[in-house]
Length: 366
Length: 122
Image 1 (spheres, rainbow over the protein chains, first blue to last red):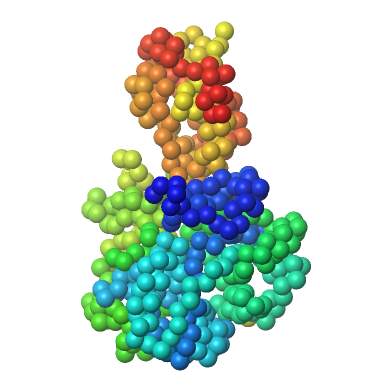
Image 2: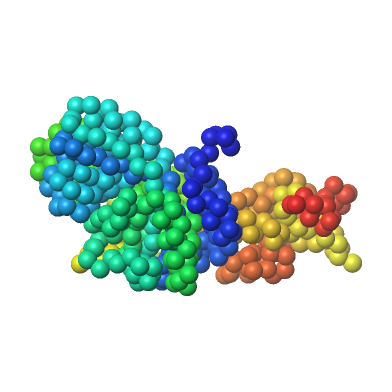
């Protein structure tokens, strides 16, 4: 990708002023780290409140009498069963039940939903959604918003000090607190936290107020990745892809039983066939023995040297205090405690299958 | 007297009595971020200029550190096994990576001095 095609965050000037180091991600120039560095940024998010600019992610508003029906076709869930303000983690699947993208959908009203999509898939998602929408009485709007995440045990208090009350909002719920704002209690760190989509001018005011609070600091994409990996959360493109189905990925909890049985979502037949025969591989947590990180792409072998699978995400877990990884292994091996070996530059590093998450989730559920 | 050289790959070498102590520069450690593991070489290993001598792992990525000249490893900085963050906190001191016996001292002539290195990183 040439420099001319790279997309820039609306608040890029603020990140530059904060001393961010930038890097390319999903077609965007993103702040990777700030002067504190990934380790401090990661730990700060777990102890206090981290502020993330996630404006590379895309918000779609889906409205109209056919909104729930469209979503039930596009995603393996029951949009009509959501309470107003309730959010659900779901997917776009292809006909083979491969994961085109993973998404959060929130019901804003009887006939209105908000969808949050990944940056790298946003354009394909929009095309997919608009094509499907032709068969329904529905309107799809791609929203132009700054999107911020504030994550950590002090996130709610920092927002309160900045004039944003979050009291009645619980985990996986979203509301529209102001005109053109969308705020959900959710995130991708394993911590309590919020994601707020809002117009740029409002975002600048909010960021200024939040950063006046010593509990809040900017957190870059590097720590966002180590936080989500410790929390056992999938990154689309690595841990879930169009070649991976929700059963292999261990994400069937996101698909209600009645939808599995009789839903008419895209990929339903393929998913039912996979469930009937059982997935050949499963996603697992992997804890390397020792301090050497095992990273995406590393091949895994069993004790006899037979291929066992591969690593899809890996790095160091600052809160865990040891390397952490995720990957796929043959289903019979996918049990906590199974010892495997990862090939890292020709050396076999022992890794144990480890329950996910590596650090406990601390969501505010009510 | 020890003399210090630099490479365009952001390494430093301190040469004394035919032995070079090698590490990465402060600029390099800042670019890499928090170091969590250093894969050290075995003493006795022979390296040609450009061979990977050490792999430095940050939270996010693994980076090769290349042999800046030909030679044989005489010592690896085993203190980094217990505390890899020395590469961040003391890149040009206690965070050195390895020592090597130079095979061909004339190769040093192709390296940078401190002023040239500073110009290189701008």
